[in-house]
Image (cartoon, rainbow, N blue to C red; front, side, top):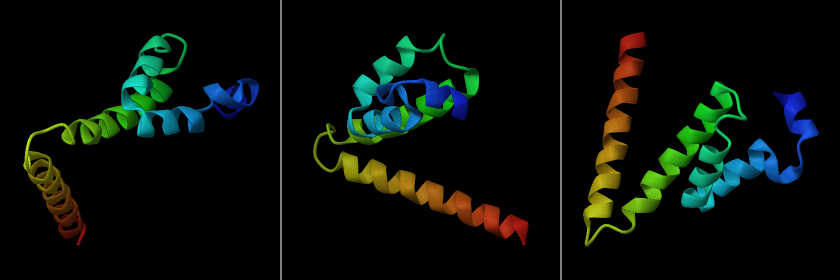
Length: 91
């Protein structure tokens, strides 16, 4: 995979695409979906996961009132509880 990145121009590198997915999720989705057949499964899934996560956070800001805060805090609480459960299970 590193060899593929060295042969590609800078605007097609994983780092640049990750930045696009973080700051401009809809454009990141378009880039990812248009390159689905060109990339391997692992690279496609990695980029799609980043774009999906940031798109979810990006869409929260369009919710009316305090719903965005409620959903964000609920998601953070669920994540925290699951991490705590995993740590307790390891002990």
